[in-house]
Length: 317
Image 1 (cartoon, rainbow, N blue to C red):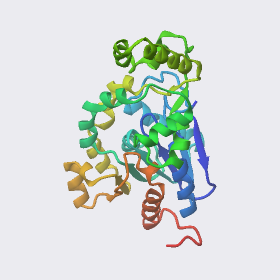
Image 2 (cartoon, rainbow, N blue to C red; image 1 turned 180 degrees about the vertical axis):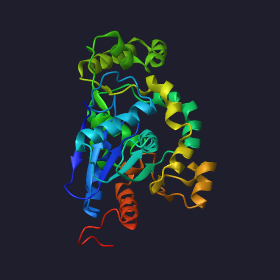
Image 3 (cartoon, rainbow, N blue to C red; image 1 turned 135 degrees about the vertical axis):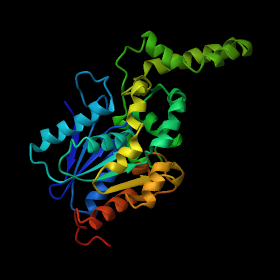
Image 4 (cartoon, helix red, strand yellow; image 1 turned 180 degrees about the horizontal axis):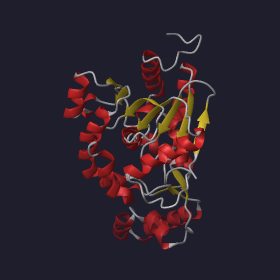
């Protein structure tokens, strides 16, 4: 069963695909903004193994399987005659959007918008991805604690987005708090400190144990998906992505957080006018969460220019 959130009643459908580890909720603030700009409907879905979606063989996160998922969801929602669809994907979701478009799983596809994912930089980043994932906290004391971490760490730079988005990224720990796995995640990172405390004296060591016990009493939250276990699929998401993107026949928009992310194929394609590109500076990787207004403005302008829809009456353009 795939979980999705729908909004709007008229106009083309914006099919929103989130990034790895995120959920449909990462589009919440953007959805409110874009629906105030143009006539459109919005469908944001939780990809397999993410959010509230439950499927058989949820460990299969290959690009081919996930692209087929998109087609099946569109068919389940609209039958054999789907409305015009603009597909928009962020990061991993952007890669899956390209694979979906290239395989023609959405026959009524109007256009394609990819947010901050480029083959060259994505492939380069894979080498350090496991280190990044290891650097994240394994557990949080509360959802509020997770929200605070996401903003302070810069993962999401917009508190309004973080308050909604992080709800879809974490879940209550399923294991008992006394289980070895959870106990290990709680105490991980303080082992070195405890070793130092042996030298500092018995009182400090006792205080640390008391604090640790207090943490164990609390209800802990952890990540909904262990992204580190999906490593074998990463290369398949991104390798060949630039050429696939360029060969998609529909109008295309690429939104980036920095121009340095362009690789050679896309630089040439952009010079040849094969797609429209816009750089949104002062954003982190979660561009649509950090600057939902700017992303909505860019997308609305793109869609109106291509006559996919029209601005809403009274909107100041």
